[in-house]
Every structure is written in C-alpha cells, then in structure tokens.
Image 1 (cartoon, rainbow, N blue to C red):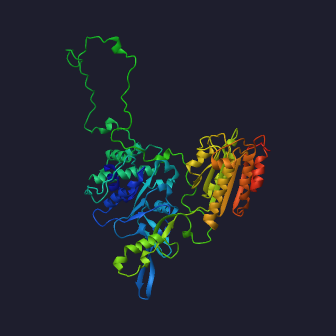
Image 2: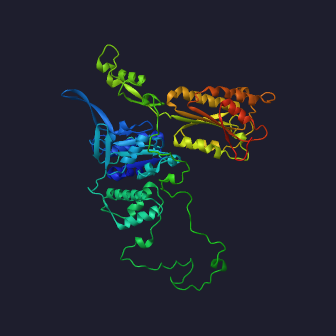
Image 3: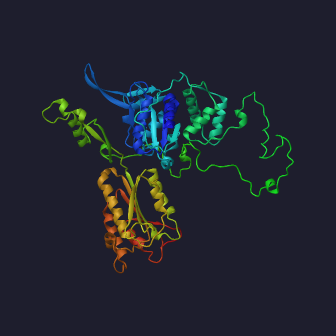
Length: 579
C-alpha cells in the first residue's frame, strides 16, 4: 500500500506523470483506491471531482457541458468546458474501471490529454486552447493488455501490478510531504542509468517515463538533482528488474583499489595470518568433483513487487483495427435508444427516460418539497445510458467432426477479416466438439468481436463422435431471428457461415430430450434440412449465407443439399477437392 501511495504522490506532483495504470486490481477496490488518489490530489483544499469513464462514454459528455443561464433577453443555454478540461478547482480525476472496454471517445480523450503539454478543443459552441490538468487512474487485467492499443498504453507513465492488494484503508494517514517549488534536475548519471535499466530495445516513452518518475521521487525526497539511486528506486517502484551497478561506480573519487584481505586460517592452525601454511591439502580439497555455483534464490526477492509493468510485450491477443475511430454506422432513428442499458444519467431531453431511477429521485425529495401529491420535477428526470449496439453480425456454425486432413482457416479467413474490419459481433455455434458438455447438443456463445479468445479456441477444437447438426442449425437460426428482432433496422448486415460435411447423426428430438434411442439412419440429415428451411425466409436484403464444403467422401452431395435449402452460396473448403 505504501508503494501505491508513493506512485499517487508522484502523479500529483508532476503533470507529466498524470496517467496511472494498475494491473490486476480487484474490481471491488477500484472505488476506494480512486478515493485515496483523489484525497492526495486534494491535499490541502477542496475535494477532487471524479469522472467515471467506461464503454458508454461519449464526446459530448467529456469535452463540453451545457449550462442554463439567465440573460437580459431571457433564458439561454451556454456551452462551457466539460469535466476533463475544467479550469477551476483542483485537478479532476478520470477513473477507468476497465481499460480494455473503454469507449472510442474515452480512448481518444486519454490519448490526447494524458501527459500532453497543451490541448485544443473545438466543439460546437466552444473553442479552447489550454494545458490539461486532469489525472487519470485506469485498471486493466494483465491478460487484456494485448487487446489495448499501444497508443493508449504508452500514455500511462506510471504502471503498477497490484494483484496482491486486498484491503484499502478508509483514510490515508500520511500527509503530503513538503517539497521544493521546482522539480529536481536530471543529471548525466541518471540518464545513463535509465538507459541501462530499460535496455536498448525499449521505446523512448518508457525511458522518459522512468526518468520522470525518478525526478519526482527525488523531488519528494527534497533533493535538487536526480542520481542513479533515484532511478533504481523508480524501477523498483513500478516493478522493473534492475541490475546492480558495478562496485567501481559506488566508490568515491578518493578511494583506491585495495586487494582483499587473505582468508582466516582454519581452526587449529597457529601460523601467523598471511604466512604460507606448511600443511599440504588433501586431494579432495584440491579439486572437488562437483564445484557448487553461486547461491540462487527461489522465487522473487523479498519485498519485490509481483508482476511486470509491461505485460503487453508477452500478450498473444490481437488488437482492434483502427482503435481510435468509430465504426461507420447507418441509423434510421436516435442512437441513444439502441443498445443494452449500462447505466443512467440526468436527462437532457424526454427520450429514453429511465422511469425507475426518475421515480426514485423524485421520491427522495417529496417531504422537502412539501407537496400533497407525488410530484416529478425536471431535475428528477434521468435517461438511460446504453452501450453502442453493433450493426453487423457474423454467425459461425462449426462442425468439428468434418475436420480431417484439412484446415478450414483458409476458407474462414475472408469472413473473419470482414468481421474484424467492420467490428461485427460474433455468435459461434459448435457441433461435435471433443470436450462438449453434452455430445448430443450443440453449444454456442456470443462474442463482441473476433478478438475474443473463445473464438480462437473454437477454431482449433478437437473433433468428437456425435454430430448434432440439426440442433446447431436451430440455434444459429434462433440467434439470427433474435438479432433482427431486438436490433430492428439497426442491424445493417449479417452473415451465416456453415462449415460442415452435412452428416448429421443426431436427430433433433435426441438433442431436445438428451436421449438417443434406437438406430438413427438418415433421421439426423433430414432433421438438419428441416431446421434449415425456415432460415431461407429471413430478410435476405441484410442476411447472406455461405456453406463451406468439407469435400468428404462418400455423401459429398450433402453440403450442396443443405446450401440449396438455405439458399446459400457454396464455398470450396479444400483446394482441388470438388464434389
């Protein structure tokens, strides 16, 4: 906890360290940790305003604020700087509980503001040129670091891995130490030591972050100059591995090299110290059969922080395409009325009102207002905050039992690339997997995009024995109908891609009941065609269907019969294998 407090004080001292990123912090501790950071920023003075940022944050909520003012000719709205660029009061604190799910507007704001010397805001009714003052506190899991764009990660100069943090005190007992008015001055020794710690392959932002952190630590310690010891302290604070400096660098200029003193004589030897011993060593003492090496510790050193401040270097996850740009959207109505509800806020108009929150706010003030009847005033009105709904959908039906001596990656790559570039949502239906919970039933899951780790695992799952193809087609059709019903005209385009050899050996009744009785015969194939027939009646203006032919023999005509029922296009799965 002391390590976290020192990092917050460095961020409060130096505007160049305005971004603090905590890895593997428990979600229940985000609020108290943000409270401690806000308390440090507000010492001494008024409390610090906290700005929550998440998946639903929008530009108009961050950069500008509309204010109702009375003027000579009546009442009018005035546009003033928003919470991130407010000039009055102490520096505000922007809190991001999950950096991997930050909205495009929040990501752009973080890239533009954190560590910047000047910010230019041009919004309708406002033009501002000022120095950003906000501090940022973000939380991210180590396994999600590979999904965050490097533009955003590089802005956070202070990174700490805090997986072992379990409790946070309600009030921090330490007070802000007295520091000099100006920051400490970096020396050539400190610059050289920073380069030795980060290594030659590190980028300039990491070197600058470590140098600025060492400068802040030196200033907190009352020093005027930054030394190599401050750089080592900064590296230990964020969890970087450091190499010990040579002993020659630790000696002062007046010290001279002296040979080490001779070893002490063994017990019982009466010869004077430094004299040649007449006792001849035994052969076992001259050349040991196995000389022991230097002692090595097991595990991390005592007091060393766990985790690395740069987990994205070893992350295997893919990143978003154009992460700072909103996807193109076609809307036929107000966008605020679409998407899942993720929160509420004070209403700006009468659209999409949150009725429960509005009634609750009004009920809290009924006694103070003194009305005889239940009254709702404009200040009680709250509207819903909705996550942006995807406008494109890719539904994959993967029959794992059709994979033999071929890889379906080449056939699926165009569809996955389309989903990646358009940020389409995914619905994956799996049939015949080796590790299925019930081999008589299909399994499915919904993902935000192709970067979900479950998608990659589904593409390379081992094949099992049973093929409940009819149940898989039924689940895919249910997912498509639900998407068209819930999103309406907001769903601009959808794809259904079926990869199968058409050999369904589990009847639909067996999938529903979980029991397989008697011989199957062709019942599984017939149920698959019967389940696919209703899908041909869906909106083909927005839905396109493709069947990837596995080119299995015998019965190579089954995929074509399924494609004809679905009114789909047949894609050749293996080169040189036709039916």
